[in-house]
Length: 249
Ligand code: OAD
Image (cartoon, rainbow, N blue to C red; front, side, top):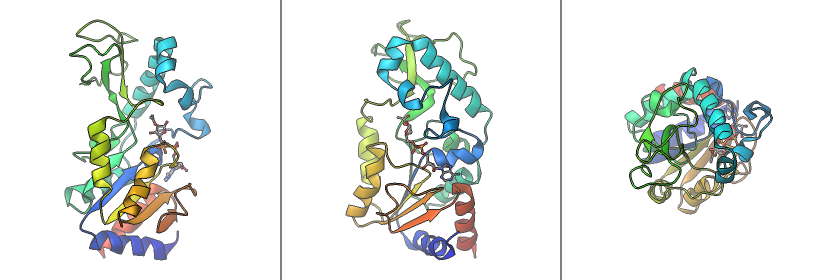
């Protein structure tokens, strides 16, 4: 672990009046949630990119719902890890102003963070596939397993879909504008994301252009690594524990 970078980041976090953190699948990996772009993310030999599209849902909604049902069952058995807990502590003590997550698993909320900006939605929410008036607003459903499968819209009895953003779909406008607003901060920290899915990946550039100090924590180098001010390689939970230890001293 590059100790100098960790202590530099710890003191930047201490001094900043506004800190925005964006998280990706690597933050939930230590909890046992598979990331998207490694072999463990595969389900029945399908890549997530093949399954997370409106076209895939239109052609086989039952298969896509089986995949989401599998992910919901898996996540329900996972617990938030040290990274989620430390970020929750920082958010509640105003050391972190905003947490944006690309993760749809709800683990930040289960660790006690309020007001998370859920960039890609939530697997615990459903919407009407046909976007009927009442059903286009997402509703919560935490049943595990889901029954019936595929689930139906309670308002019009058409198919329900997962309340997530799929490839080829737009980020909800108020989520995008809140995220762009949060990118105007003093320190912008990106953790556990491959930094290739847009527009989430460009938020760090927006922050940098706005004058933020930028940092990345990831197991391996990403396309952002050469652009951020500090790139720390290591597991999100271990690095955040180390930063927390240094901030407490
Ligand atoms: P990816 O699976 O693309 O990338 C996960 C990143 O986390 C990789 O760069 C890993 O090296 C890193 N990583 C793994 N374990 C880690 C650990 N313990 N500590 C730190 N880093 C670790 O996941 P995302 O970047 O989150 O979108 O993917 C972005 C989006 O693509 C997802 O939100 C999802 C997916 O398709 C939608 O569902 C729309």
